[in-house]
Length: 235
Length: 235
DNA sequence: ACAAAAGTGTTGTATTTACACCCATGA
DNA sequence: TCATGGGTGTAAATACAACACTTTTGT
Image 1 (cartoon, rainbow over the protein chains, first blue to last red):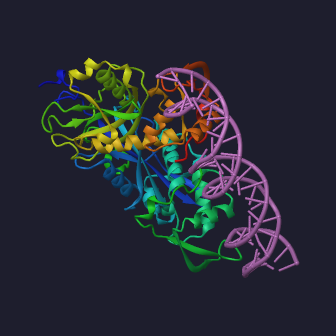
Image 2: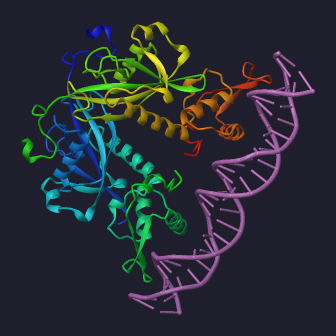
Image 3: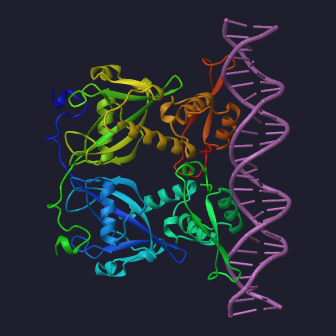
């Protein structure tokens, strides 16, 4: 048995090993806009340029765990929804070393933030439409992450992580508008969402956004129903 | 500047490096069925068990290039449609070493095959519905690859790679049925596909599948139209 | 002549979209 | 009282699904 008579390599030692990084596209939501958490790179090359927070996958952890660790380290938040986007593997994507990077995205609430922790590193939030150029292929990571989020939003009630526990249908619609980057008809959105039968209406009202006041809803997904609701928004 | 005051790691040397593999879900199409190319693993552990063809990402290549190289090596085919599926990173996914694997899928025509090359390695084609258990997490890779292919098929005329240059609408429908794993109404499918205006009708007929004969069509995608055609099949 | 696939037409239903309109209330 | 978002209703347009029916031709 040797490597030459096998499609699958038979020994590991003869193959190169690579640094494997995780870069996180952290989406936050505030004031009707989807925002992105960016850090200034703290060392050369490209020092000072904006980048996604990232880190390296260690020996004893999966990339999912690495992503969660990095998110915790950068934002202080735990148990946050995260999803893998894609692997970025161009051998020259970073100048100084060959690093394979796995992009992840996360959805977090802006108001849960330890502002000091962010300032410590000079991090700041940018709206998607008003974003600086990012280092390496981080811009492409953001694009793919958003595409994945939009796709998911078409089939699942996604992004409730970005709203308070109780939210109005208008708030939910504005979030969907921010994610899908297009306007949605208020009446039609309301009917569509309610027809899914997955929101629980409360008897409290939000009076901050309108004179009349809007009922708050909550969302407690059944594991069962999660997959059964079909398409939410035409994609 | 050191690693402790930076979110982004500042030096690479202190971080572990990992073997990065590519595993290929190779879809072929024959006799109305979607098939999968599998290889018997040639060494311990799990020797003889079925697995996806794979190999390691080298220093000077991207994972896309590695996937193409592995496909060429296993099937002899070049310039084949391939797409990344996901990274599989559980530290214990392989018993003998920590290997991070990037799954890819490819669409190939069965009749373009060098049968001898396959037999050399004991490879064989399995229908999706009649597939042996695969080693490690390769079964999960197949599932995700199929899901991605089905999604893509809903929005793009996909899998034309699996048909001859000229094909009838019935052949195309059977391919879609194999990909989506459900029956499609012949009349409705025909109308839907033709309404997209992306197929070129030839004046030749296929007489092998029916007495009446069916016109052959070809597909030469415009780069422009590719993204504009909207949904093909409800997903 | 008839079986079987190719191809067309029709009809009912579901979904999407646009938009009119009433409601409640703080300023 | 009036401007504003909350919430309901309706009607047209589109898309989907089911299925009848007609065409063609090798056997």
